[in-house]
Image (cartoon, rainbow, N blue to C red):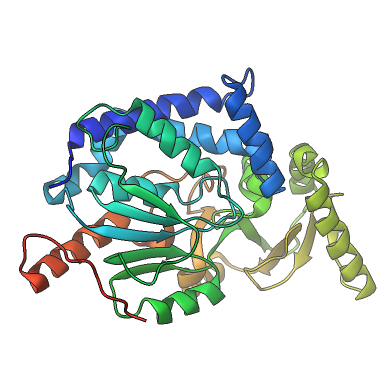
Length: 371
């Protein structure tokens, strides 16, 4: 059996969390090497700016400490390790370290991982994986002197894994559904976040909502892409709150190019919109919004909008506002806030148990090509 010690793995990620919190601070950067990494990450992806990467690191660092990890993992611990199992992770690339949660789940469960990174985010996870191994205690199965349970691959392999976790847009979801139909899989598609306003929000609440909308340039599945507002809603306080958070977006050339293009298109088409100078607010029923555009829709009664949200549940990652999550929480998921509401650890434990029963061998065999 491969080396696995639950307590030492918790310790390894606790140490990684300390590192992430340290390098996630605005100033000073602790290592010249990390400063170079930030530059390279932004060159690969113009929306991976140093402030947003450091923000993501501080967020992960806030979760990677011993007590939080133990509390989260305790219900699954009797099933660990999922020894000699290999899981393919196909990661998205819209946010810095967006696939880190799957990576964390797989390693804490004791799986081997094949990781297919997005072409837009090939640097961050390999860097922090090596930092994890440098600082992991011996006997954890993660130390540099122990076999590496993680292998980064340039292409999706045809075989060599027992289950797959893949995240992408709706088109890639359809492809994954066909490609992996014969093996255990957890597939995620495009989801969105929205906000429900009542018109009596405080300036502080609107500032928090502005963060829900603008953080990561609005590119995350938990980024608020649509507002539900009461009829005759006064947008000016919200526009003021958005303007106070707009400087990082105004400074980004790629983002402002998208903003100018969308604004020009709407102007030519005679479409009405509210303009902040970096974000356009448009009345539109769709949850899916172009970059630099925020949709809104009016409602008459709370019951009406709640019924509409219930109907859209399969396409929603989260809702902030009246009767839902507090404003400012959308971009701060807890360890147990699983993407698409699908419990990743439960999936890993279930697939492992099913395959072990089916094969009735000591552990898992290498799968055959299932294409």
